[in-house]
Length: 351
Image 1: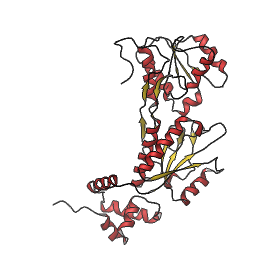
Image 2: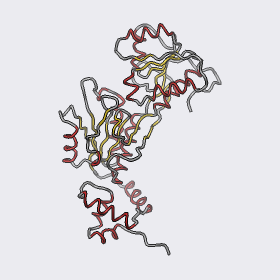
Image 3: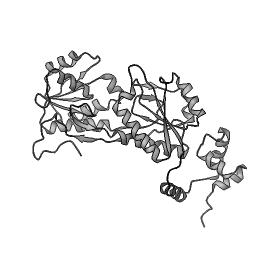
Image 4: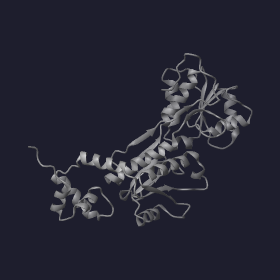
């Protein structure tokens, strides 16, 4: 006969606690004192306790059949600056919309905690979250690339970040599949016969997106020994003449723009796609120019982040993970009006 499975009641009897306290301690719930959590977790490991997967599956099934009850609040932790108005960035607002919808389905509400809105610092934000009993954080993209937030007490919270702007510490992350989107955009250009394909982007934007757009562009352009390599146009100022001068000097017949704004600059100077050149954007959106490219699944990204965060909270996973997960959500191709049609029978870069 196999050995009897160690139960939470066995741990409770050995520790001199009730089973409910043991259950919360195993899940690292902040309502239980840290020393008690550590003692229970060490005892559970020593006794060889393992959760019963059948009981976990049954509990999950029962929860899915019931109308969600209110379970708590999740913080949307953001920072507004004069140069970084995140509420004006459509991608981020759609992240938030998707996150709110999924949180509501699971019985949670999302509360925006904006450091500059409320005139608070990161340390003060942590105190606010503690006081309100908030254990889960969705970390909005930050104003600067390579942001370091190592002084924040992450050990007290479950957290999921959006994108690559926060580099330290390494947290669980959800982001659009930007590298794949850039590859798809370039393969579409090549399938339609464009030869001199140029890249236009801002260095700061490329850094805050993990260099995925330029990396995907290069990989798609060079893996089959593509001959017509055009020097990239890195725009470090808002002077439109930088882009116009590069375009007239290099004479590309197609562009991948990492931001739709760059095509608008050329459009405002009388250049038109696809009449004068082809244009794709790996994060096309609502500019009104109907740019061909890949549209990020922004709301799905928000929903996915909530799913990941709530699972972490249920498992009691706090602190920075030893091996962070990066969950990438693919977008969809939008044909737009800025490319000539692909020849009949020619395979494009999608798929």
